[in-house]
Length: 260
Image (tube, helix red, strand yellow):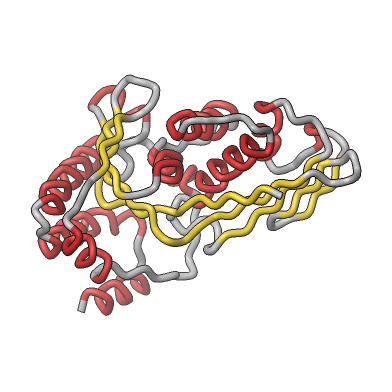
């Protein structure tokens, strides 16, 4: 049995600038950080010549074309796996929480299948293959930061232009700044979920994305200078703009409690 885990991520600035409709004209930039919450995928070879899938649903089918889960179906097709495989997935958090769980699943699945087939794959190739399935094969209106964050891990600056994949620069923080950042970030489950594809399918607001990219660039400077408090103020300013689209009175109340 092959078991692979892929981390979820938080965006530390520049969210939304990884959409082609924006970065192909203006260039995109965001900072992502992998966190210690994961999606797990296990792959094994069953005795029967069938395809067994265990996720939030159970599937047992004879051919790839019968698979209902779109990502699994396209991944099996892409790698030429026709039958006699069992795939099980688990996650530390539910889908739709804004932590990139869908792309983490795709990345973990592809990595597990490559190990299962004894096929080496580079980290960048893994991220691009996940993008190929989600964006090109399944026509999802999403960006590329989630796949790269899941594949590379760590805290990274992602620069987007007309090239197929972003330039990736690890953000190396002094140890004390890293600890300070970790101690001052809080993560809450609100109970609300939404589809990233639905959010990103809306018309592109270039003014807001320009602002988002500017916040990301300022955040990079603040983090490299170990100015964690200033970074927090930048996140707060960004949320004040973003909340108009995504928040409600309940979340606003929790947010103020957390800041206090």
